[in-house]
Each structure stands twice: as structure tokens, then as C-alpha cells.
Length: 366
Image (cartoon, rainbow, N blue to C red; front, side):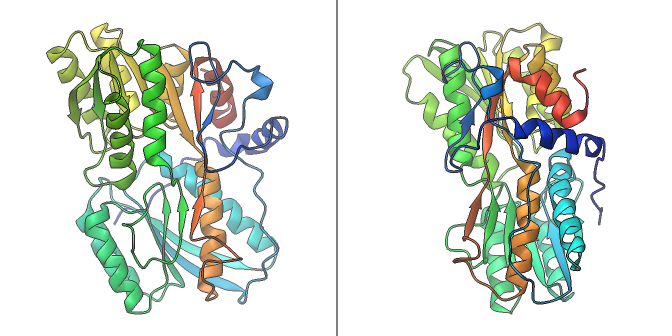
């Protein structure tokens, strides 16, 4: 197995980030995707001081009193990737705050180098026998993994899901922390693209991993949005398996086959980077919309190669996952202490927001 090593290059700016966000307006209701406006976007133009925070670094533990002074968790997710480094930072902060209260939390945080439902099954089976207080899963494949989670719960394991991919509806997992609006995120990004293109043109979709709920849901939201407009057409849909290199290759192939391509819709954190590299190399003026906060993607956003990005609050996902895992470990069920689904926000950001986001997350604008 490959232990996910957290990229720590953004830790140094967390304190500054919290101060920066404190000056921003309050977070919108979590049931809606937020939009940071830009010229030509769907939202009304706002001043920079009105942009709502995409990431909340000011998380604090609630007043729940743990029943034990030590907990041991196991978390597994789709694939080793910088997106989950950001989730890990939120987990570490929750762990630190619990330690300040005299509560020690240890956890495994592990994933394969490439997304694999079979690999995830094997990890879960081993974790089930290891006696962890709670097992958390970012579901690699909804159809393949949900029955495994049901079996684990039936045999007494305390199982939750987290990150951006929940299990199938009706799964016996206890709770989910993460993005509950992936379909809407895909639709919102595509609507922004459609408006940018004047509601006409040819587009392609880069999905991500086959069967990954978040990727599939975003792609469906994108496809359903395109279907609303008679003068828009999807000419290609490809799976890049959350790989920048594969996304680059696929985007180049699509651009070669469709040199008049107007738009590329990217449904994970890797493929906006691969798509942007391909667009730059080919000299295309294809408009790219995509997901999340990869540093290279943010630079492409700043430079106008990418039109907009939907940034998820990974930090809060990690923080809330630890806090809810502890409550589950104590035998609590969804209700007053925590909901069955804890929804985290997505903020759509545009070119004028890119420099601020680069400074906020990576401590630089270059």
C-alpha cells in the first residue's frame, strides 16, 4: 500500500488565510454552489471584498464531550493526489484541536497510486479486521463499493463516507461528509461555459474515473445542461482516470479530431491541467471550465487559459470528517449531533480571483 504523503507547501499560509477570510462576507447556505463573479459570468459583478470564501480555515470543534481519550481511525480514498492533501490538512487541524483538549486521535490515511475499486475493496477488508474505531471511505466506484460497505456494517464495523464521493443511495454507511451537489457543480460550470459561448458550439467532456460518483455526477450535470440548448453539441466524452497526463493526451486527440472545438468541460482536479496544457500546445482558443484548486490550474486561470474553476472546501471536509468520525466512534447516530450528510461548499472562481487564491493557498501569485 502507498501512504499518502501530505504536500505541506500551504501550511505556512494557513494563519494568513484565516485572517484573509475573516474579512470576507459570511458563507452562503451550504445547499448552494457559490459563485465569485467576473465579467461575463452568471453572477452579478461584485467587488473583490464581496467574494465569499472558498475555503474556511477557521474551523473550531463544537462542544461535544468525547467518551474516550484515544481514538484510532482508518481512511481510504480514490488515489494519491494533491486534492486529498488539502483534505488531510483539515484532518490534522481537527486532530490538533482535540489534542489540546486531551484527546488523542491517530489515523491511517492511505490510497493507491491509481483509482481502483478492487484495491479499495482489499484495503477495506483488511481494515475491517484491524479493530479501528471508525472506517472512512471516499468511494472509488459506487456500484462496486457500496455492497462492501453494507457487509462491513452488518458485521459490526462503524463505517462512514467522506470527501467528494458518497456510496449508493440506501447504503448502510452511517454518515457522509463532503460534496453533496456534484451534479449541480457540473451543471453550474457548464452553464457558465454556455453563456461564455453564446449558447452555441461544440464541447467535449473529460470525466475522470469510471464509476466515481463525483466525476460521473458532474459529467451528467454537464450533459444535461448542454442538452437544454439546441445549438450546442457534445462531440466527445472521455475518461482520464484522474490523470493529468492522460487528460492531456485525450484533450490533444479531441482537439485534433475537432479543431473547431469550442469548449472543454473538466470534471475533476487533474483534467483542467491536462486540458490547459493541450490547449496551449495546440494554439486552440477552446474555452475550459473545470474543478478545484490545483496550483497549475490556478495559474492557467490567472492567465486566461481556463475560464472558471469550481473550488471545493477540502479543508472543511477533512476537519468535519474527524469530528463526525469521533461521534460515530462513541456510538452516536445521525440526528442532533450531526446530520446524515454534512454538505461542504463549492465556489466558482474566475480570472480576477486567481491571484488571490494562489496567494491564499500557495503563498504566492506565480
